[in-house]
Length: 86
Image (cartoon, rainbow, N blue to C red; front, side, top):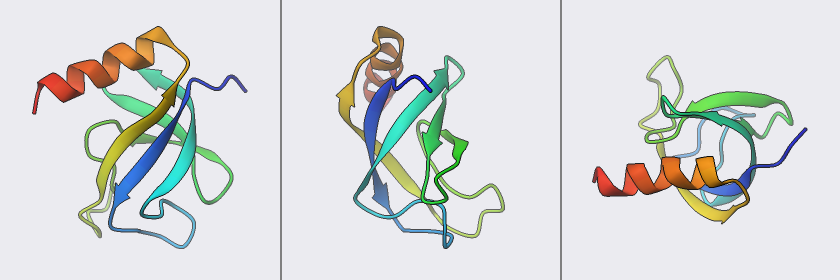
């Protein structure tokens, strides 16, 4: 699996094997529509919103991603775009 970067999840932890507050995750994919593919606490890769990662069922308010290391220009552009939308 190609590693595009490392992202820190900041927000309410959710799910026994999903995302944990202040934990750094590997980003193994992304798309320009605003999704990042993350190897989460289950050790499987799942897609999460790049702007507001949270469970699809709305059971948690979720949080945000903070880039720690980015190895891909496209992923950098995605987060640059997100930061200018705030």
